[in-house]
Length: 421
Image 1 (cartoon, rainbow, N blue to C red):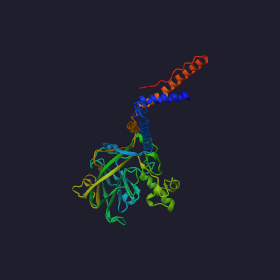
Image 2: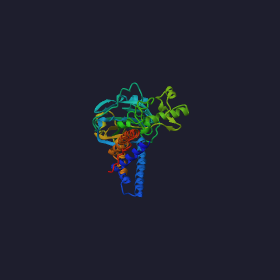
Image 3: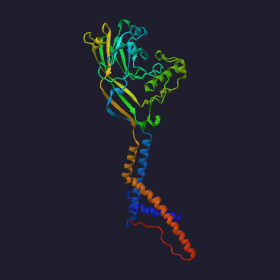
Image 4: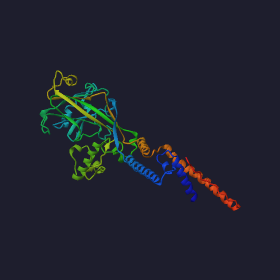
């Protein structure tokens, strides 16, 4: 034990006198008073304590970090975006008979005239029976193989162009004191809920809806983080019954279904696409009144800009290109299109990357004590390599001394090297 203690003292003195770290040499420099040495020891100890505390704070921030969204590019081409779903709901609640009567009407998509019944399908929303285009929210074997529509042009002539017959004479019950339709612009995989953005189109008007999409994708380093730590879910990390993909809005819809069914024993008519087997087998996604529906990590938002005016038979493009031969009475025209050819693409990533933490720690160590990678090598050299070599030499000298004592020749040599520099 004495050999180790002496070797450790010698290595410590040599380290302090030769290290590149700040302040250590003043502890062992000659011609220094005891008070000076004590002050330098206290200063170094306080710096080491500060390094330890701040390092723990940095590690805690790294281990419990959230995520951040930054703009990756403002020139992402529009063909990388899904065209939004368009859901049209009459203020008078569209009935099945009305849909069938207008199944032969023509709409225009990407410049091609098509039957509206091919492009639109009847959908059930919280606003009643509606007609939807590019709508794929429900988990249906007939549509699961279909991908959302895309478009490569940004002018109103090449997107969706339709005529809507408002039919005020058919109004029996309505929730707004007006004649017209509500148009919802939403994600193709999201159910139309109360919070879905919409615009009201009055009767006998021509309307333009310019859509600005914005996509947010996830970086690889965030995907590897546990969902509880990143506070968001990828669309494939949770399966929702009756919905094709996980979105927070779909999850909230399912949660409401669950709450209503279990507390009331029934559900509203707009959840009529469900069945009792599904409702009884539905997993609980709420706790008391709290719905466990984290945000999406990756998502696309659609912002609308609306403009419109009175309809004109002689000037309205919808009537001259789609509705030839159709009376303009009670008609409302609608054009939905992308407003530009490039849009914003965001990157959802970790708040701190590994190299950011490494840079913070390196700056912290350098600020308080001048420690670098080479300083750590110095510590290993003096307290591992040199300590081992001195212990080895000490044992050899000790063995030699014992042998000399046994032979009657005692001449002990100094076997610790005193480093003066």
